[in-house]
Image (cartoon, rainbow, N blue to C red):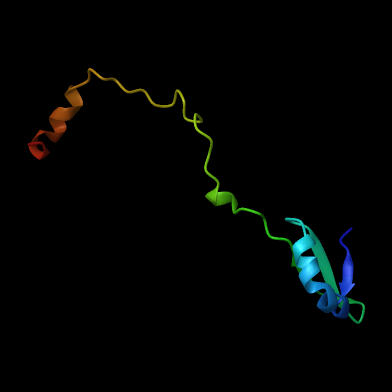
Amino acid sequence: MMPTMTIEEVQAKLVDLIHTLQPGEEVVISEHDQPVARLVGAPSKPVASRRPPPGLGKGCITIVSDDDEHLQDFAEYMP
C-alpha cells in the first residue's frame, strides 16, 4: 500500500522525502482526507539511454570479404 501524507507533512519534509524516495516508489498527498496528488520517485536512468552490452548482435551479420560483385552497382560513384 502506498503511504499517504498530508500537504502539511509533505511541506515540512519535502527535501528529505525527495532524497529518500526510491525509483518508482509513490507517496499519496492528501488534503482534508482526500487524495490530491502523487509524488513518484524518478528512475535513476532513462531506459532509452542505456547502451546495450557488446556482443548482442553476434552472429546476426555475415561479411563476405571476397564478394566484389556488389561493388559493380556503385562503379559510377567510385573514383
